[in-house]
Amino acid sequence: MKSNNLTQLFFLLSLIVFLVSGCDEGIAPRPEAIDLGFEGTISFIGEWPEGVQRTHIVMFKEPLNSADDFTILNIRYIGSEIPANSTTYDYNTSDNFLEAGLEAGDYAYLAVAQSFSPALSLVRSDWVVVGIYSNNPDQSPSTLTLPANASLDNINITCDFTNPPPQPPGKNQALPSY
Picture 1 (cartoon, rainbow, N blue to C red):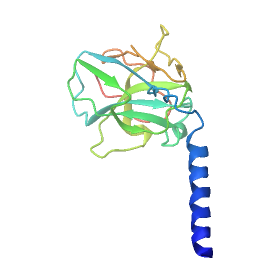
Picture 2: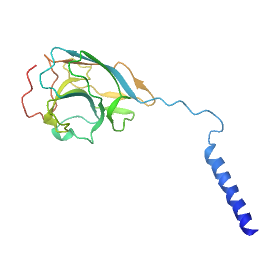
Picture 3: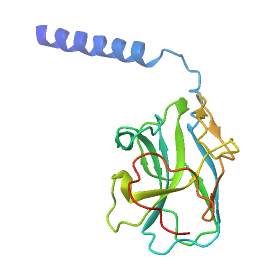
Picture 4: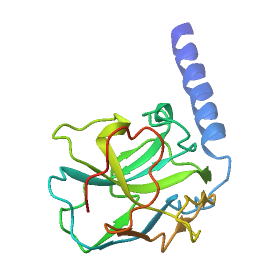
């Protein structure tokens, strides 16, 4: 009889814990989740260089002040591979190769980069920046601010192969001719 009372007591305590922890908002509906991210169009002007192995849109949290800043710890987003010889490419951060913790806040560098290396690499010298997110006439990078609980539209980037943007530090070889 004693074990039956203990079983009932355990069941009653478990039920109370379940009800208390699961009903913090009563029967109110949960708020609809809004994906945090951004989307836009990448436009390519001119002829794609020969030998491009891959093209991605990449976002870094901190500025690229040296080749040492080009690390997996600084990368917050890598978009899916952009097909070679595209003239335009629509992207959305919900379609990604790597999304490493997008959070509301400022991001220092959003760029389209191309690699001529057959292997996927995180070595800065293997990548050429062909377009950046910029609101500045000199094509210097603009900070992208992601607001909480919102997705940004029209984060567009132009890649002009005849007039590439300034390269971040760490590119120790000559740029391919465009």
